[in-house]
Amino acid sequence: MRHLAAYLLLVAGGNATPTAADVTALLAQAGIEVNAERLSQLMGDLEGKDIAEIIAAGKEKLMVAGVAAAAPAAAAAGAAPAAEAPQVEKAKVEEVDALDGGMDMFGGGGGGGDY
Image (cartoon, rainbow, N blue to C red):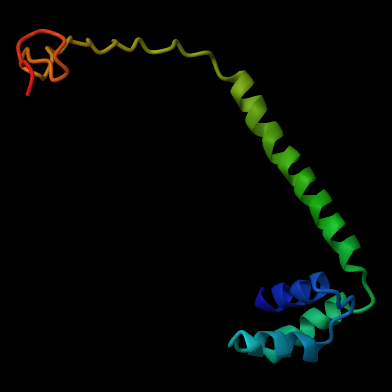
């Protein structure tokens, strides 16, 4: 994953076709160890392909997978009998006496007076 992330960072930075050496250099600058075998496999998989097309195809697959996963869930929800909503008892709110002990610190009455 780190190799692909580095490759995509290089593409986003303006290098349309990063090489294995470019990816290795970027990862080395970040202090990340390169797995030569995985990098070689990634470079082989991406060779001659447009990264924008690969990303677009991946997005399409995600949308299809999302719709396919949502359909059974929606069907199951529609087939389930409607359960009655549980009755929730509302908590009683008690009025609390003023915490000022009958004193009004702004002199509006009630006792406290002027200080």
